[in-house]
Image (cartoon, rainbow, N blue to C red; front, side, top):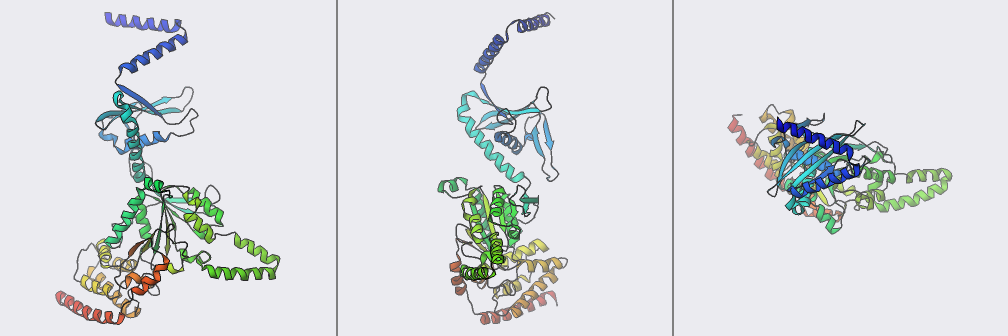
Length: 519
């Protein structure tokens, strides 16, 4: 009781001194006390406020990174006594936030560190002042501080990439204004595990994507914009859109589907490019369908001379039509979009062109530096076929696989979309599904004539350099249009001889299968 009485008397004395002494002296005493405390404590403290400066407008990026980092290390497994949990409508992931004035402990290089989340209410206001305080050993602060903060930032960016909601954007025809894109949640289920591609092609694409995503320092060192171009070409139904979705899911990137018919001119195209975010895939599908962009330049020159004569004959009306024609997206504008100065206004972007007829695309659009990787998506190879059967029917092997293999090697290959539709339609009966696949391949051989296993009627010319040897897709890094014709000629085969061999082998396979099943 005596001790409490003395303590109370001491507190009363401090109150009297605080009221009697001038504020300048009190401030000096407080600074002296903090200096002594800092001298005696074995820890250093670093405060990271939510906003930079005092205006509360400029968000401190380091504060956001600390918040994400604490989520990535899962504070629920730590000794923190109180956490705030939240979940958005568009995500199933539960996010953690350290409750106000609580601490989370961490370790780095065998040293104990801690983060304390401070929340203070601003006087005469409903606003709150938030900050994180980092506590680390004073003796090692020079060796720990910067490497640890770099570790926090790297971990936070990686966590943000895999946890944030991905979006699918499309241009709304107002690219010169702020709202040039509209978006919906991107939830396409395609992955490289479910894609009907040959294993070697999957490996090459994923390795290239991984090297690109991890290549920040390399691209900066060599002085190149951190972007990469992909040209996906092949017959309809060969899986170009599914591959784009798998790439986005693999890298956790947003997707921007650019509709060129909605873009009025080159200025609007540049504005749309500026509005795209980092870590995104910009897609222009069916680039060959835009005739004004992919037409031969020699024809363009001839047409231009004719137009000049037509304009002089039409007078004022012809001049107005010529001016309207100038207000559109040109080949030059698209070239600058993919590889010009404006294309470097951002980082970690992938630009993808798709086409069913690569020979119709202007060579300047698909040269190295613009389209760095050319992926020929042809008809299904045997491994891709087995992947489809595994996905749709849950089968790893079947007696009819030998017949399918014979069809594939003899020019009866189908696209993944064609095989997938047959399997989907007959998924309740495995035998019927595979027999229909074999029948469709036989019909393809008979009706296709000398098609050589191309991707459907009228489309076999796109991947002849690969499909005539084996019906599978191929990756060509640094390919060029000048080599396409040469490769096509080198891939020609004797169709008649292959057809005879196929029919003989197929007859024996179908008979043996029928004998085993008692048909």
